[in-house]
Image (tube, rainbow, N blue to C red; front, side, top):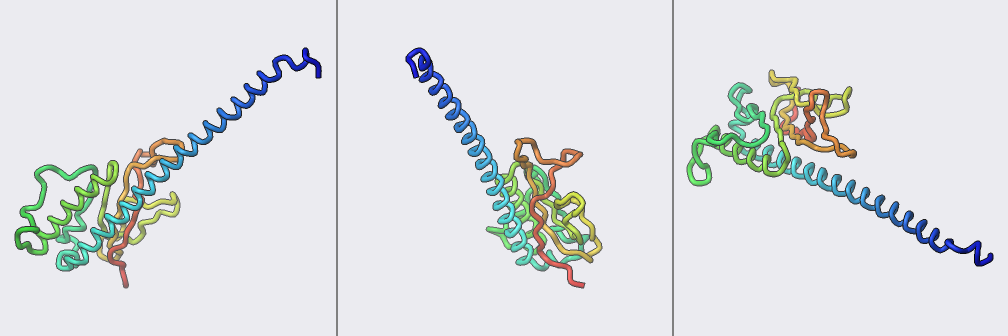
Length: 190
């Protein structure tokens, strides 16, 4: 190769190597972003399962309220979204006072809702009797509860505003996110 033919060849090599390096850096940044998003959603999932398990344990420990008829069961009244309402707390602290089963249920629910709101973004929780929490046509859990007459499992459903892999918010046609966790507290046995 003559000197005239090789002039500028080193510059082209440098530019090509910079292009390859830039593509590698962009790919690495994209993988890092995807890993962070997946890690965040995984931590939310773990927190939701832990919170559902915690409430289920509190419900089982307070069997007088949990076994109450649907109309008077304080746990079946949970349909929570966002943050606990100010001033809507329990009538007394069950840490320092003796509480009956209804007061203990209200105390536990209020404290649990505060932890739920702190752990998950735009948290939502529903406790209900549901014969079919999984909707196979849309391949996800649903907030609807079918089985309020007592002939269904007692289920805790928890969800939060998550994101898809492309960064868009998860939601259905009505912009509502589905539950991510459906925890059976008491299965229905006919």
